[in-house]
Amino acid sequence: MFVIAIMKNKAFFHIIQVAIGQRCQLDNSLKEEEWAWVMEMATKHAIMGLVADAIEKLPENQRPPTPLRLECASQTVKTEKCNIHTFRDCVAITKIFEKRGFKCCILKGQGNALSYNNPLRRQSGDIDLWLNGGREKVIGFVKSQKNSIEARIHHVEYSEKGISTSVELHYVPMFLYSFISQYRFEKFCKKEMERQMCHLVDIDKSLLGTDKDGDYRFAVPTPDFNAVFQMVHIMRHLFEEGIGLRQLIDYYHVLRLLPKEDHEKVMRVLRELGLKRFAASMMYVLEKVCDINEELMICPKDNHCGELLLYEIMMAGNFGIEDNRLGEWRHKSIFHMFIWKLNNNMKYWKLCPSEVAWGPAFRIWHFCWRKCKGYV
Image (cartoon, rainbow, N blue to C red; front, side, top):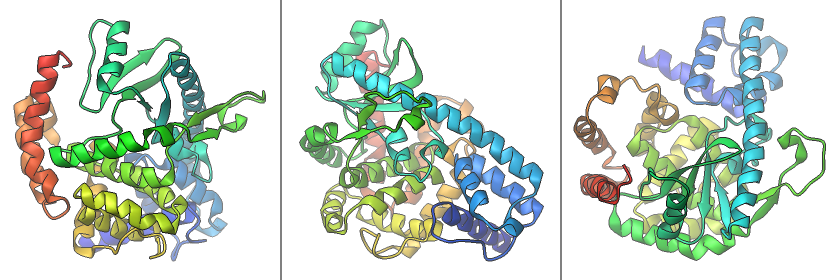
Protein backbone atom coordinates (compact mmCIF):
# COMPACT_ATOMS: atom_id res chain seq x y z
CA MET A 1 0.00 0.00 0.00
CA PHE A 2 2.86 2.36 0.90
CA VAL A 3 4.60 1.64 -2.43
CA ILE A 4 1.37 2.29 -4.35
CA ALA A 5 0.99 5.65 -2.59
CA ILE A 6 4.56 6.61 -3.51
CA MET A 7 3.98 5.67 -7.17
CA LYS A 8 0.73 7.66 -7.27
CA ASN A 9 2.42 10.72 -5.78
CA LYS A 10 5.28 10.41 -8.26
CA ALA A 11 2.87 10.39 -11.20
CA PHE A 12 1.02 13.36 -9.68
CA PHE A 13 4.27 15.29 -9.34
CA HIS A 14 5.15 14.48 -12.96
CA ILE A 15 1.84 16.00 -14.07
CA ILE A 16 2.72 19.17 -12.14
CA GLN A 17 6.13 19.20 -13.81
CA VAL A 18 4.49 18.95 -17.24
CA ALA A 19 2.24 21.90 -16.33
CA ILE A 20 5.13 24.16 -15.27
CA GLY A 21 7.33 23.13 -18.22
CA GLN A 22 9.83 20.91 -16.40
CA ARG A 23 9.01 17.86 -18.55
CA CYS A 24 7.16 17.13 -21.79
CA GLN A 25 5.33 13.90 -20.98
CA LEU A 26 4.76 11.23 -18.34
CA ASP A 27 6.95 8.16 -17.97
CA ASN A 28 3.86 5.95 -18.29
CA SER A 29 0.26 6.51 -19.29
CA LEU A 30 -2.21 6.56 -16.38
CA LYS A 31 -5.31 4.40 -16.04
CA GLU A 32 -8.74 5.94 -15.64
CA GLU A 33 -8.81 5.29 -11.88
CA GLU A 34 -5.35 6.86 -11.54
CA TRP A 35 -6.53 9.98 -13.37
CA ALA A 36 -9.60 10.09 -11.10
CA TRP A 37 -7.24 10.08 -8.10
CA VAL A 38 -5.17 12.87 -9.70
CA MET A 39 -8.33 14.98 -10.08
CA GLU A 40 -9.22 14.33 -6.44
CA MET A 41 -5.75 15.40 -5.29
CA ALA A 42 -5.81 18.47 -7.55
CA THR A 43 -9.04 19.55 -5.86
CA LYS A 44 -7.57 18.89 -2.40
CA HIS A 45 -4.52 21.02 -3.18
CA ALA A 46 -6.37 23.71 -5.20
CA ILE A 47 -4.35 23.18 -8.40
CA MET A 48 -6.94 21.94 -10.91
CA GLY A 49 -5.97 24.73 -13.30
CA LEU A 50 -2.42 23.39 -13.41
CA VAL A 51 -3.71 19.90 -14.22
CA ALA A 52 -5.67 21.47 -17.09
CA ASP A 53 -2.40 23.03 -18.35
CA ALA A 54 -0.72 19.62 -18.16
CA ILE A 55 -3.52 17.84 -20.03
CA GLU A 56 -3.26 20.35 -22.89
CA LYS A 57 0.51 19.75 -23.13
CA LEU A 58 0.48 15.96 -22.89
CA PRO A 59 0.49 13.73 -25.99
CA GLU A 60 -3.01 12.55 -26.90
CA ASN A 61 -2.30 8.98 -25.80
CA GLN A 62 -1.42 10.16 -22.27
CA ARG A 63 -4.46 12.35 -21.66
CA PRO A 64 -7.31 11.27 -19.37
CA PRO A 65 -10.65 9.89 -20.65
CA THR A 66 -13.10 12.44 -22.05
CA PRO A 67 -15.43 12.58 -18.98
CA LEU A 68 -12.49 13.48 -16.72
CA ARG A 69 -11.23 16.03 -19.23
CA LEU A 70 -14.63 17.69 -19.25
CA GLU A 71 -14.76 17.71 -15.46
CA CYS A 72 -11.32 19.35 -15.34
CA ALA A 73 -12.28 21.87 -18.04
CA SER A 74 -15.48 22.80 -16.20
CA GLN A 75 -13.65 23.50 -12.93
CA THR A 76 -10.93 25.40 -14.77
CA VAL A 77 -13.47 27.72 -16.44
CA LYS A 78 -14.85 28.55 -12.98
CA THR A 79 -11.32 29.24 -11.74
CA GLU A 80 -10.64 31.58 -14.66
CA LYS A 81 -13.86 33.53 -14.09
CA CYS A 82 -13.09 33.83 -10.39
CA ASN A 83 -9.57 35.08 -11.16
CA ILE A 84 -10.85 37.78 -13.51
CA HIS A 85 -13.16 38.98 -10.76
CA THR A 86 -10.35 38.93 -8.17
CA PHE A 87 -7.93 40.79 -10.45
CA ARG A 88 -10.56 43.50 -10.93
CA ASP A 89 -11.07 43.76 -7.18
CA CYS A 90 -7.31 44.00 -6.59
CA VAL A 91 -7.01 46.94 -8.98
CA ALA A 92 -10.07 48.61 -7.43
CA ILE A 93 -9.16 48.14 -3.75
CA THR A 94 -5.64 49.41 -4.38
CA LYS A 95 -6.98 52.64 -5.91
CA ILE A 96 -9.47 53.06 -3.06
CA PHE A 97 -6.77 52.91 -0.37
CA GLU A 98 -4.37 55.08 -2.34
CA LYS A 99 -7.05 57.78 -2.39
CA ARG A 100 -7.34 57.40 1.39
CA GLY A 101 -3.64 58.15 1.74
CA PHE A 102 -2.35 54.61 2.23
CA LYS A 103 0.46 53.06 0.25
CA CYS A 104 -0.25 49.38 -0.31
CA CYS A 105 0.93 46.13 -1.82
CA ILE A 106 -0.89 42.92 -2.87
CA LEU A 107 0.62 39.95 -1.02
CA LYS A 108 0.52 36.39 -2.40
CA GLY A 109 -2.67 35.69 -4.39
CA GLN A 110 -2.92 37.62 -7.62
CA GLY A 111 0.66 38.80 -7.27
CA ASN A 112 1.79 35.17 -7.37
CA ALA A 113 -0.57 34.41 -10.23
CA LEU A 114 1.23 36.94 -12.44
CA SER A 115 4.33 34.72 -12.48
CA TYR A 116 2.40 31.69 -13.78
CA ASN A 117 2.34 30.78 -17.48
CA ASN A 118 -1.44 31.19 -17.31
CA PRO A 119 -2.30 33.55 -14.42
CA LEU A 120 -6.02 32.86 -14.65
CA ARG A 121 -5.50 29.19 -13.82
CA ARG A 122 -4.00 29.68 -10.40
CA GLN A 123 -6.88 29.19 -7.97
CA SER A 124 -7.53 32.54 -6.32
CA GLY A 125 -8.48 33.22 -2.71
CA ASP A 126 -9.00 36.38 -0.70
CA ILE A 127 -7.05 39.63 -1.12
CA ASP A 128 -4.16 40.20 1.26
CA LEU A 129 -3.45 43.93 1.19
CA TRP A 130 -0.35 45.17 3.03
CA LEU A 131 -0.82 48.80 4.14
CA ASN A 132 1.70 51.27 5.48
CA GLY A 133 1.14 53.18 8.71
CA GLY A 134 1.43 50.38 11.25
CA ARG A 135 -0.96 48.33 13.35
CA GLU A 136 -2.66 51.14 15.30
CA LYS A 137 -3.35 53.27 12.24
CA VAL A 138 -4.81 50.42 10.18
CA ILE A 139 -6.94 49.07 13.03
CA GLY A 140 -8.03 52.63 13.83
CA PHE A 141 -9.20 53.08 10.25
CA VAL A 142 -11.22 49.83 10.32
CA LYS A 143 -12.77 50.82 13.67
CA SER A 144 -13.91 54.08 12.08
CA GLN A 145 -15.75 52.05 9.42
CA LYS A 146 -17.46 49.40 11.55
CA ASN A 147 -18.50 48.80 15.16
CA SER A 148 -16.83 45.43 15.78
CA ILE A 149 -13.65 44.09 14.22
CA GLU A 150 -11.83 40.77 14.02
CA ALA A 151 -8.09 41.41 14.23
CA ARG A 152 -5.00 39.29 14.71
CA ILE A 153 -1.39 40.17 15.34
CA HIS A 154 -0.70 40.60 11.60
CA HIS A 155 -4.00 41.52 9.92
CA VAL A 156 -7.59 42.64 10.36
CA GLU A 157 -10.65 41.37 8.47
CA TYR A 158 -12.22 44.02 6.25
CA SER A 159 -15.04 44.45 3.75
CA GLU A 160 -15.42 47.27 1.24
CA LYS A 161 -18.61 48.27 -0.54
CA GLY A 162 -18.39 47.23 -4.17
CA ILE A 163 -15.61 44.68 -3.50
CA SER A 164 -17.07 41.18 -3.21
CA THR A 165 -13.74 39.37 -2.66
CA SER A 166 -12.83 38.90 1.01
CA VAL A 167 -10.08 41.31 2.11
CA GLU A 168 -7.47 41.09 4.87
CA LEU A 169 -5.64 44.32 5.69
CA HIS A 170 -2.10 43.53 6.80
CA TYR A 171 0.02 45.79 8.96
CA VAL A 172 2.62 43.01 9.03
CA PRO A 173 2.80 40.49 6.16
CA MET A 174 2.99 37.44 8.48
CA PHE A 175 3.99 36.45 12.01
CA LEU A 176 6.18 33.98 13.87
CA TYR A 177 5.62 32.40 17.28
CA SER A 178 9.10 33.32 18.50
CA PHE A 179 8.94 36.88 19.85
CA ILE A 180 12.63 37.32 18.97
CA SER A 181 12.11 36.14 15.38
CA GLN A 182 8.96 38.25 15.08
CA TYR A 183 10.84 41.36 16.18
CA ARG A 184 13.47 40.66 13.52
CA PHE A 185 10.84 39.96 10.86
CA GLU A 186 8.92 43.17 11.58
CA LYS A 187 12.19 45.11 11.45
CA PHE A 188 12.97 43.50 8.08
CA CYS A 189 9.47 44.32 6.75
CA LYS A 190 9.64 47.93 7.97
CA LYS A 191 12.95 48.37 6.17
CA GLU A 192 11.53 46.87 2.95
CA MET A 193 8.06 48.45 3.05
CA GLU A 194 8.71 51.49 0.86
CA ARG A 195 10.51 49.46 -1.84
CA GLN A 196 7.78 46.80 -1.97
CA MET A 197 4.92 49.30 -2.15
CA CYS A 198 6.62 51.11 -5.02
CA HIS A 199 7.12 47.91 -7.03
CA LEU A 200 4.21 48.47 -9.41
CA VAL A 201 3.21 46.05 -12.16
CA ASP A 202 0.88 46.69 -15.07
CA ILE A 203 -2.02 44.26 -15.34
CA ASP A 204 -2.90 43.08 -18.83
CA LYS A 205 -6.50 43.93 -19.66
CA SER A 206 -7.11 40.31 -20.67
CA LEU A 207 -6.72 39.34 -16.99
CA LEU A 208 -9.55 41.74 -16.17
CA GLY A 209 -11.89 40.41 -18.86
CA THR A 210 -12.03 43.71 -20.72
CA ASP A 211 -10.90 45.08 -24.07
CA LYS A 212 -10.70 48.66 -22.82
CA ASP A 213 -7.34 50.31 -22.18
CA GLY A 214 -6.83 51.85 -18.76
CA ASP A 215 -4.61 52.36 -15.74
CA TYR A 216 -4.64 48.78 -14.49
CA ARG A 217 -1.87 48.23 -11.96
CA PHE A 218 -1.00 47.39 -8.38
CA ALA A 219 2.15 46.85 -6.34
CA VAL A 220 3.47 43.33 -5.67
CA PRO A 221 6.55 42.24 -3.66
CA THR A 222 9.90 41.76 -5.34
CA PRO A 223 11.24 38.17 -5.67
CA ASP A 224 13.85 38.64 -2.92
CA PHE A 225 11.21 39.84 -0.44
CA ASN A 226 8.83 37.08 -1.48
CA ALA A 227 11.54 34.47 -0.96
CA VAL A 228 11.60 35.44 2.74
CA PHE A 229 7.95 36.33 3.32
CA GLN A 230 6.45 33.32 1.55
CA MET A 231 8.82 30.95 3.34
CA VAL A 232 7.48 32.36 6.63
CA HIS A 233 3.92 32.06 5.26
CA ILE A 234 4.35 28.40 4.32
CA MET A 235 5.92 27.56 7.68
CA ARG A 236 3.20 29.42 9.57
CA HIS A 237 0.34 27.63 7.81
CA LEU A 238 2.02 24.28 8.33
CA PHE A 239 1.82 24.92 12.08
CA GLU A 240 -1.60 26.54 12.05
CA GLU A 241 -3.79 24.48 9.72
CA GLY A 242 -1.84 22.76 6.97
CA ILE A 243 -0.36 23.79 3.64
CA GLY A 244 -1.04 22.55 0.13
CA LEU A 245 0.86 22.19 -3.12
CA ARG A 246 -0.51 25.47 -4.47
CA GLN A 247 1.72 27.38 -2.03
CA LEU A 248 4.68 25.16 -2.94
CA ILE A 249 4.21 25.89 -6.64
CA ASP A 250 3.96 29.60 -5.80
CA TYR A 251 7.36 29.32 -4.16
CA TYR A 252 8.76 27.51 -7.20
CA HIS A 253 7.85 30.57 -9.28
CA VAL A 254 9.45 32.84 -6.66
CA LEU A 255 12.71 30.90 -6.99
CA ARG A 256 12.46 30.92 -10.78
CA LEU A 257 12.43 34.75 -10.72
CA LEU A 258 14.97 35.16 -7.90
CA PRO A 259 18.45 36.21 -9.14
CA LYS A 260 21.26 33.87 -8.07
CA GLU A 261 23.11 36.78 -6.44
CA ASP A 262 20.19 37.27 -4.01
CA HIS A 263 20.30 33.72 -2.63
CA GLU A 264 22.73 34.45 0.19
CA LYS A 265 20.90 37.65 1.15
CA VAL A 266 17.66 35.71 1.45
CA MET A 267 19.29 32.92 3.47
CA ARG A 268 20.88 35.43 5.83
CA VAL A 269 17.42 36.72 6.77
CA LEU A 270 15.94 33.21 7.03
CA ARG A 271 18.77 32.14 9.35
CA GLU A 272 18.04 35.14 11.58
CA LEU A 273 14.41 34.01 11.73
CA GLY A 274 15.37 30.47 12.73
CA LEU A 275 14.21 28.99 9.41
CA LYS A 276 17.46 27.62 7.99
CA ARG A 277 16.44 23.96 8.38
CA PHE A 278 12.90 24.63 7.20
CA ALA A 279 14.31 26.26 4.06
CA ALA A 280 16.53 23.21 3.48
CA SER A 281 13.45 20.97 3.85
CA MET A 282 11.59 23.12 1.33
CA MET A 283 14.36 22.62 -1.21
CA TYR A 284 13.93 18.85 -0.91
CA VAL A 285 10.15 19.15 -1.39
CA LEU A 286 10.53 21.43 -4.40
CA GLU A 287 13.00 19.02 -5.96
CA LYS A 288 10.50 16.17 -5.60
CA VAL A 289 7.40 18.11 -6.65
CA CYS A 290 8.75 20.61 -9.20
CA ASP A 291 12.05 18.98 -10.19
CA ILE A 292 14.12 22.09 -9.43
CA ASN A 293 17.90 21.85 -9.82
CA GLU A 294 20.64 23.11 -7.53
CA GLU A 295 20.87 26.38 -9.45
CA LEU A 296 17.42 27.38 -8.20
CA MET A 297 17.96 26.19 -4.62
CA ILE A 298 18.72 28.93 -2.08
CA CYS A 299 20.47 26.39 0.18
CA PRO A 300 21.43 22.69 0.20
CA LYS A 301 18.43 20.39 0.67
CA ASP A 302 17.72 18.38 3.82
CA ASN A 303 16.40 14.96 2.77
CA HIS A 304 15.39 13.71 6.22
CA CYS A 305 13.38 16.75 7.32
CA GLY A 306 12.16 17.24 3.77
CA GLU A 307 10.47 13.84 3.79
CA LEU A 308 8.51 14.84 6.90
CA LEU A 309 7.49 18.15 5.35
CA LEU A 310 6.36 16.51 2.10
CA TYR A 311 4.34 13.91 4.00
CA GLU A 312 2.56 16.64 5.98
CA ILE A 313 1.81 18.64 2.82
CA MET A 314 0.32 15.63 1.03
CA MET A 315 -1.78 14.70 4.08
CA ALA A 316 -3.15 18.16 4.85
CA GLY A 317 -3.92 19.70 1.47
CA ASN A 318 -4.84 23.34 0.92
CA PHE A 319 -4.98 24.93 4.40
CA GLY A 320 -5.79 21.55 5.96
CA ILE A 321 -9.40 21.57 4.75
CA GLU A 322 -9.22 17.90 3.73
CA ASP A 323 -7.02 16.75 6.64
CA ASN A 324 -8.93 13.82 8.13
CA ARG A 325 -6.59 13.70 11.13
CA LEU A 326 -8.29 16.75 12.61
CA GLY A 327 -11.64 14.98 12.58
CA GLU A 328 -13.78 15.73 15.61
CA TRP A 329 -11.18 18.18 17.01
CA ARG A 330 -12.50 20.84 14.62
CA HIS A 331 -15.83 20.84 16.47
CA LYS A 332 -14.53 20.93 20.02
CA SER A 333 -13.54 23.87 22.21
CA ILE A 334 -10.68 26.33 21.79
CA PHE A 335 -8.93 24.54 24.64
CA HIS A 336 -9.15 21.17 22.85
CA MET A 337 -7.75 22.71 19.65
CA PHE A 338 -4.94 24.31 21.67
CA ILE A 339 -3.97 20.91 23.09
CA TRP A 340 -4.25 19.19 19.71
CA LYS A 341 -2.05 21.78 17.97
CA LEU A 342 0.48 21.74 20.80
CA ASN A 343 0.81 17.97 20.52
CA ASN A 344 0.74 17.97 16.70
CA ASN A 345 3.43 20.66 16.37
CA MET A 346 5.93 18.73 18.46
CA LYS A 347 6.78 16.62 15.42
CA TYR A 348 8.07 19.76 13.68
CA TRP A 349 10.87 20.21 16.23
CA LYS A 350 13.59 19.33 13.71
CA LEU A 351 12.10 21.65 11.07
CA CYS A 352 12.06 24.82 13.19
CA PRO A 353 12.70 24.26 16.92
CA SER A 354 12.27 27.93 17.94
CA GLU A 355 8.68 27.94 16.64
CA VAL A 356 7.82 24.74 18.49
CA ALA A 357 9.39 26.05 21.71
CA TRP A 358 7.65 29.45 21.58
CA GLY A 359 4.31 28.14 20.29
CA PRO A 360 2.42 27.64 23.57
CA ALA A 361 3.50 31.02 25.02
CA PHE A 362 2.57 32.84 21.80
CA ARG A 363 -0.85 31.21 21.53
CA ILE A 364 -1.77 32.14 25.12
CA TRP A 365 -0.44 35.69 24.72
CA HIS A 366 -2.18 36.17 21.37
CA PHE A 367 -5.54 34.99 22.68
CA CYS A 368 -5.27 37.28 25.73
CA TRP A 369 -4.19 40.24 23.55
CA ARG A 370 -7.17 39.79 21.22
CA LYS A 371 -9.57 39.33 24.14
CA CYS A 372 -8.34 42.41 25.98
CA LYS A 373 -8.52 44.52 22.82
CA GLY A 374 -11.98 43.23 21.91
CA TYR A 375 -10.75 41.75 18.64
CA VAL A 376 -12.32 38.29 19.10
